[in-house]
Length: 340
Ligand code: KG4
Ligand code: ZN
Image 1: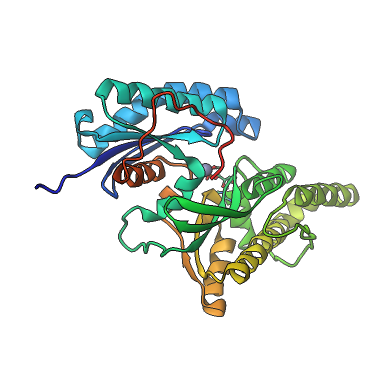
Image 2: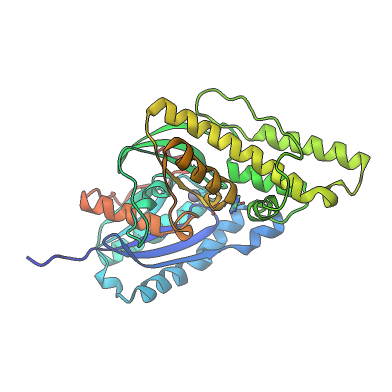
């Protein structure tokens, strides 16, 4: 019997990135992402504009992914798409497109949970990337999510803690807005933090039970701090921007690391995998590296391309579900609020 290659098309449209990827087994052949610059003018994602942009992007993005992969759409074995969680109008574009194409090609449809996909992105075959062994802890940190998940197996996951208000990326972006930085502000705060003094200003860490997070108090603390200081000195932000950024980053990384340490203590699991756009942050990367030395943890950081929202992570979940013949009915619905 010939060893058959499985080709999966993954489609992601949960927020403001339209993405399509082709996987051959667990190896990526293409991963095309069209981001939406339009939201920068508004300082955050505007749902109605996001869904319109998905409608414009989806056909060319899927077409390009298939072309780049060097296959024909007739070779596809299944189509995997994000069914939630995310913005309803955005999810509907990917969901309807995936259904129509799967029906047209007469191949199985596979619905994928976006949060599981951020975690399972670690199972994409990639030179130099070690796959985490089960059980491991996953920390997903992005503009839309902040979770600590105990991953017992591919589809056996338990959320140990999550944010009760803002996501960590939102904390970066909203703090940046208060400082007059562009959207998204995370990368610039990170850049400035590296040349600033992290102990220049002190922001109190929130007290939240268990492994849950809260970031909205920090945003308010920064707002009052900036209002007070600029009243006394209108040039305060300009003169101290790098130190303010470093102090914010120090506080945020501290909050994340405190909860991770607590999760390790609670579970005895020392394999930690991170994902989501904020995992690009230099502060969190350094803190994880030093925890490897200090506490004997083993940390896993996927290639940046697979940590932000992308369809490669949707396709790998599609592949894992395909092996289990875990297909969806064609009446499957998009769900804005979908739990792991
Ligand atoms: O995963 P992602 O691309 O999209 C979702 O939000 O799902 O994450 C984007 C978030 C934004 O909030 C952005 O400010 C943040 O990730 N981000 C960073 C860094 N790079 C991106 N935050 C802190 N430091 C960074 N280097
Ligand atoms: Zn995401």
